[in-house]
Image (cartoon, rainbow, N blue to C red; front, top):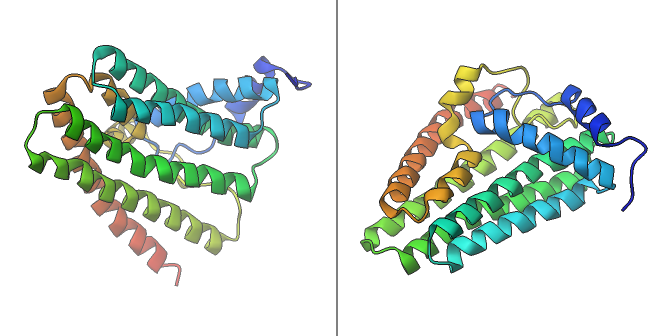
Length: 244
């Protein structure tokens, strides 16, 4: 394997100093996923991996987790395997951007690839939940509307977030990635928006085998995400309207 002039420990130290703003970041992403991603990015740097390579590895772990949800009958083992695969995939999703910053900045193609993979993940996650419920849960058909609604809410939120970020960049005339905005958010805010965190969804799959608990928690996350979307759309619309 190709090894860089600087090793793992140097990379971890440098990455701590190059963290992007935590403004708007939910608690899991802020306190768990980014630190995990930092260490994975340092390992990737020491091994000579590229940010795009890390993105593809992230996509592979996510694909494994999603495949288990759709294909395997929910059990404690399959549920824990799913959660672990999705959590690792999410941490690697953070690592690719951190690795890019460590190497001197990412590319437009790299950011495009990252967003395309995220788009596939956003849609597929709730589709495989629907498949799982259809194949393995004994429930009324009306319950299938829950993951279908989650697809609509999650995709709308993802698109609006990305579009708002692009319009901000266009107005500012900058290329930096500031999807979360600029500045800082309090720990209390990060906890308040935790229900919208993809990382929390990853953890939730560890109880996929426990049907009533998973269905209830999943439905509550849908309501929380939908509520956040309504508030965020209003805020973002007023922001982009001010651009002229």
